[in-house]
Amino acid sequence: MTASAHPPVPPPASAPSMDVLLTGTVFFDLIFTGFAHPPAPGTEVWTTGMGSSPGGIANLAVACSRLGLRTGLAAGFADDLYGDWMWQVLADQEHVDLSYSRQFHAWHTPVTVSLALEDDRSMVTHGHRTPEPVADLIADPPRTGAVLVDLGDPELRAAPWWRRAREAGALIFADAGWDPEQAWDRQILDDLRHCDAFTPNADEAMGYTRTSSPEEAVETLAEHVPLAVVTCGSGGALAVERSTGQRARVPSLRTDLVDATGAGDVFAAALVLGTLRGWPLEQRLRFAVLCSSLAVQQFGGSLAAPGWGDIADWRRQVLRSAATDPEAAITARDYAFVDDLLTGMATRRVRRAEATIARISDAGLAAATPPEAPTQEEGQP
Image (cartoon, rainbow, N blue to C red; front, side, top):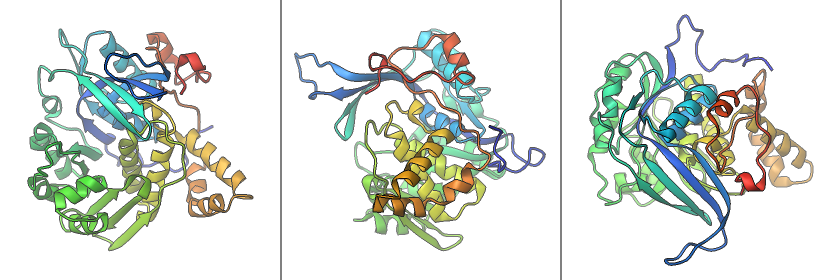
């Protein structure tokens, strides 16, 4: 199929050089799913599913790129096997611009092992800081439509580059992450004056605002930032847009949860796309909920992100079910706007996480030659 007839950004002559610019840490993720029971000390547990993929900030980068956003990433990579493989996957397979990234000699890749247990996950991580701060890799940012920044990371929060990007016209989408100490630094609310959107989950939003419900939290956040969005997991999402006075709340979609890793990143990527395209607030929320619901049906954060082919498959399935399923009929009606989004859109398959580290030549060919679906032994849950 041809490229989209409705590009997400203005024509190249007036557009920034990138749609989205990111910085952060890339982890090599190993994901295990399908536990008969949780692991216990002194025992061995066999699982039915395993996958490997780039993780950390790569979750967000891949999610943005798969939705057609021109995505740049500034991150440190090791020059070990893991680092080489992740660079190949992101640059050649996922078309993420790594011009502002760098490989460091004699530094090893941070690694996370994720255990998907029932409706949650546990993680074990090992790594060291990059030899140079990743924020220094992007001291002079290019023109970009949007920047996503983690205000919960003191180093990134203090970095001046994203404020420079905003002065040049970029929209700043902020998150803060979970505070393990639950101190909920109020400085983050002050820093929102430099941002255009804030997308915490319900617990984080209530923590930072000292409120007792997501509804109270989103109203309080809207006093600090033009677009306040609170995600509520199975409770959907709600938002307030100060510039238009719009308020929206959308429910979650019925789905079979496999692995929630990266779901928030996929939500944020979809929200950025909708904002850059100027969609109404409720449509942005619905699209973000849809994309995150598709992501949790796969395992592995970055490579679980949906592409337009996944969205098209979902739409066809909902329309088929609508004839006999009242809930599907309501969903088909509420998401009728997806038909317009799919018009003229390329919908080829995307690669999923596999139990093995793919050969470099295989990773390089993935975009041109979509792989067959993995077998049980290859890592499907």
